[in-house]
Image 1 (cartoon, rainbow, N blue to C red):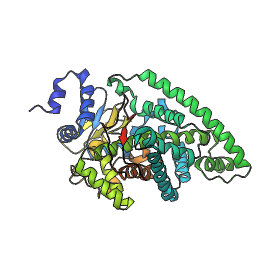
Image 2: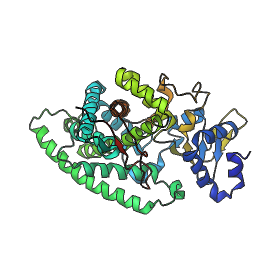
Image 3: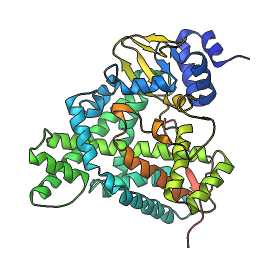
Image 4: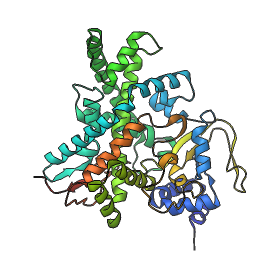
Length: 417
């Protein structure tokens, strides 16, 4: 029987990454199992794949050795494009502080109500992506984060193109058929300009209100009060930059995560029936495990990319140990890592009662998702409310329309009376 590695070894070196990428997205679990067993550090001309849990953890937790250099052309001086700098720690700490974890129960109720409202007004048939998986996070951005006087279509556009360019338009993505890399960059630049104009006007309005004594309590207002206090090195420009980061991170990744969780849950009728039963009759916390386990099977991001800053050994202490040279683009294939039996007992079993602390759904290390606590209630609550509807028909599944993420998903359901 010809294995994945047999086919890759037989291919011309110039074709191997494209072929491996096809396996990574098209037949992930058996491909990863073979790599973990035979070649856990798989070195190609374009990238090196690390597939074991220990190596993925090492890569994501050593920012001085494995840096986010490839983010910098896309995100400039934004703190998430920096490794272990003063600005990174200061701005991340500020953003964590203004996104109060104490607000999570209220945020979850907001998400529940917004999802129900969208379904109620959908008349029994809806585009799940526009109205729910993007539409609900956009409402959170507008009504909870303080993006007043904004057009939801523009907010979606700005988040989409920034995410597309940062995460799906890297040099190693050139093997993707139909990808217009230059066009994606232009769209991200256009979106960035339009977003900056909107945010500048928003901050100007909110600044005047804050100085006049407004006690409006949203992230934008909180950031401005901090900037005006002169108590920390954080100015109005930083407010604009980091407010934009809230939008970019909130919409598109949530949409992709919700869609992927639903794609996995709907792939097995028995699993879907079980999840719906818990959604209808169980506690919210009982249902969350179904979503996080579904995202272990079908994560929004199957890998995180880093640039190696010094020659480094991976798979150390094993017969498969390899030196990764300085300058190498390394993919920590965290989808594979979440099925490594060294870290996840019975990894092939769908187990909603798992401890998800070691999963990579929100990343790990210095660049762990800033909004992980908000996403940790938003994603499962959207899925839960969708599954609570009767006579659900998910049709043919999501339509990607040539994109790396779902663009449309027509579903139908029973109308509540």
